[in-house]
Amino acid sequence: MNGKGLLVVISGPAGAGKGTVVKELVRDDNIRVSVSATTRAPRQGEENGVHYHFLTREQFERMIEEDGFLEYAQYVGNFYGSPKKQAEDWMKQGKDVILEIEVQGCKKIKEKFPECVSIFIMPPSMEILENRLRGRGTETEEVIAKRMKRAAEEIGLSEDYDHIVINDTVDECVAGIRDILEKERSARQ
Ligand code: 5GP
Image 1: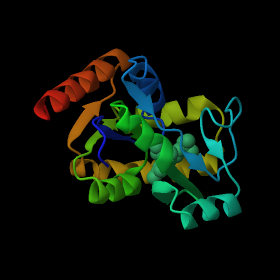
Image 2 (image 1 turned 180 degrees about the vertical axis):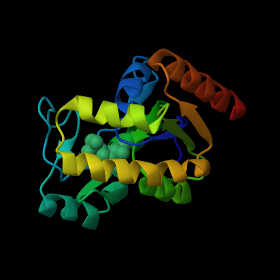
Image 3 (image 1 turned 45 degrees about the vertical axis):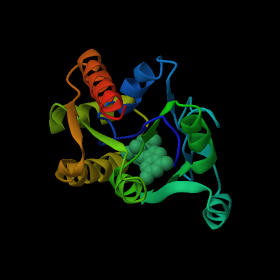
């Protein structure tokens, strides 16, 4: 990718608070967040085209065939992918683009775009993570158990990231990431 904006990968277990942190980060007009495509069903309150592009399995497969993704991966039984065109356009305009994706996706992005900045958001503890997942009230016990297992696996891979930021409080976490991006930008000038 030839754009001037940074390609920023943010990962962390479901419930680590990535969504809230990213929402704060994109208040900066130079930062955009990529809207992923997924085959998972929308949760209550999620809007098509805002939280995700909700696709059928067939539509998702067609996008793979058309080379429409920067990366895609399977996560707890569903497909998730980062659409290519929007991210490329923003980066060409000089915007930093955040991909909020899981660890397999990050690995693929690093192979394709070694210049990307990868950040892992760590929950303060597994107990807090489980409480946050449960607090959402949108997931069954079975899904919570699967997501906790996956969270432990993901935390084990956090060392592959350029930066690890603990999400103790949202404000500190956001400040930590802004600091990282600032340094990355000036290192590239
Ligand atoms: P959720 O179902 O909770 O919205 O997301 C599940 C996981 O999929 C999260 O870790 C989220 O970051 C990840 N994810 C969301 N979009 C993408 C994507 O486009 N690609 C990949 N690889 N992971 C994604």
